[in-house]
Image 1 (tube, rainbow, N blue to C red):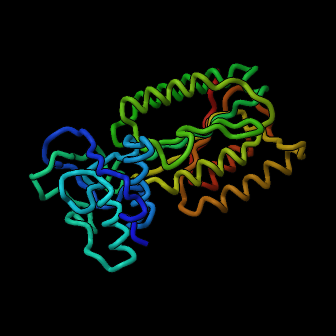
Image 2 (tube, rainbow, N blue to C red):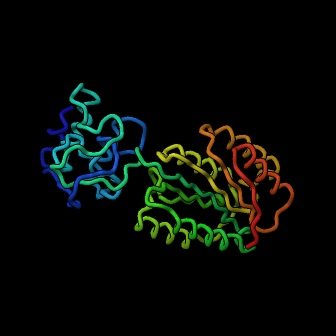
Image 3 (cartoon, one colour):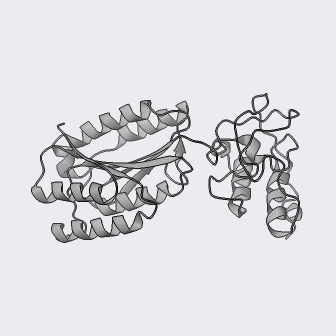
Length: 290
């Protein structure tokens, strides 16, 4: 398909970006944080241009696939032509991480998650009525806000609150990158979360594992805050927690450590679940008093 004909009315849009040669390592064309070049890299460029999603581009130089110094539709076309029509490869640095050898453009690179060496931090927090009523939710929200304040600029992260459903930050897509603006948004999200009902912990843990798989960080960890309880759709708690332990451990194919913080008092069943979850997933168990 000729993409130029498909969008005849589109005029190239050039983003207003800071000047200066990029010294940050990146892989040209790799915009989606996933391994290797794929059609989603072109989609990220198109959405940045035409769906007001420029903020998703942590490294704008990476999106400039043809290295002409501007970010426009031809960059997406360049990626697709390389992938499907044996066209020229993206300009250097490609296919390995490297600095921009060209001093002729003013795009720059904030952080390329494909080349970042920072941490990946993923949080799973109980917001069930029982946990909230004991003061646990308020305690966990306070701890989480402190953690967010300490993130470096290359930290990738995600936050999952669970009751009957799972509420997450960012709302969709890959892990968030801890810029000052995103950290402020994340803290606002955390403080906005209210108590819910039900306690489907399995869904929260599985969602965190799936997001961690999209991380390009050198080290990923998952941290749980809650009372170890878990019932979903009226299931027997002991059976539900045991099946959760088995399913979560099986899904954690990349061996991301799961650290569990048991907040407040909890029955022996729930504490043992957290101890087993941590032990079988390379994590630690600790107690905290709200």
